[in-house]
Length: 195
Image (cartoon, rainbow, N blue to C red):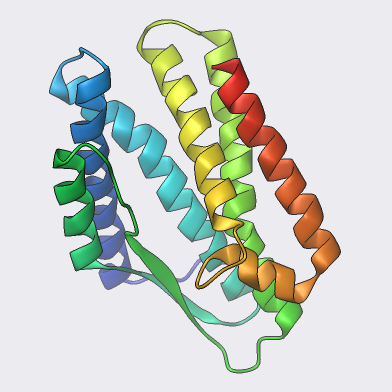
């Protein structure tokens, strides 16, 4: 299946990715005594991959069901992420994949929604493998932070409220929601204990 995109979407993804990487660079500089370029690379790879692949998972599944789907950044929210990072905490809501198909079923909407958090679970496990292979140095830091950020992002998105993915998954199938939430919590707790 070919993924359909546009110049606008690619531009929005790149800007959001860079803004998130900058915000997390500001935060991580407080924790790690590394040069700013190294911290930026760590942020771009870990948080950037978490964000990009989460959104692309929604997009690919939505397009599989015949829906128009493209990411759109939220410029004010990206600015808020950077401003809050300077204050010592971070609030990140970079944008979302806009999906249009008036004939999507509840099951299709649920499958589109669950794709993002499950992508983050997969990424958390891949970063865990990287951390296990090289637990020290920059590679270890990338593995550790990538594992944690993906586990947290998956867990946060599985909360069944408002515009978060968990609400659509729960509305589709309570059993699937329970299994996905259980997997997400195990990965989150494991990542916190292991690191």
